[in-house]
Amino acid sequence: MKTFISLSIVIVFALITLWLQDAFKETPLVPEKKQKHFPDYFMDGFAVTQMNEQGLPAYVFRAERLQHYSDNNSSEITAPHIEIHDQRGNWSIVAARAVVYGETDIIHLYDQVAIRREKTPQQDGLAIDTSYLKVDTRKKIAETDRDAHISTGTLELDTRGMVFDS
Image 1 (cartoon, rainbow, N blue to C red):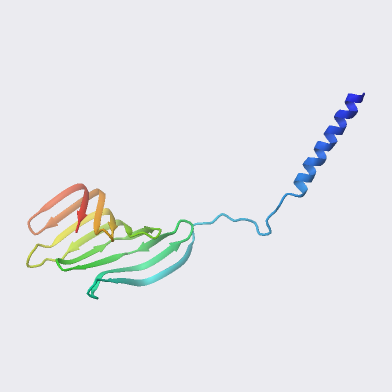
Image 2 (image 1 turned 45 degrees about the vertical axis):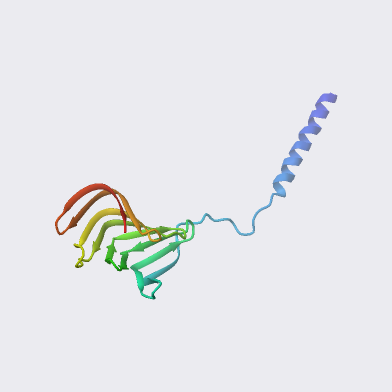
């Protein structure tokens, strides 16, 4: 009988402890919501120009639309167009869309990517077409691991993968 009474007291204390633990559990005043992939800001019809040391445009980055997402700090860009001005010739890069992750100098271009270099007296024009291109604007390197078609005035070349260092 003593064992039964002792066991009953332990069970009652255990139940009271569980009830108190649940009763005083902290509940947030505002329920937590999972952050969704939703743009926190956007721009339509924008252009960004970076100047060189002489005060002339080094490159111009234009697009129809940019949407920034704070959940992963990315920017999705519609119809990007990059113009690169260099003493050796002017370049143009267009694509259907682009993505920039974080605060980096790397632009990922997707779908119908076309790179064009103007013809100059010193060199033929150049055309490169691919489905993906990663551009490092600081190092001035463009690369792809996808199929690419390269053509100049005298050359036609199909390749898988390419690294282009201006």
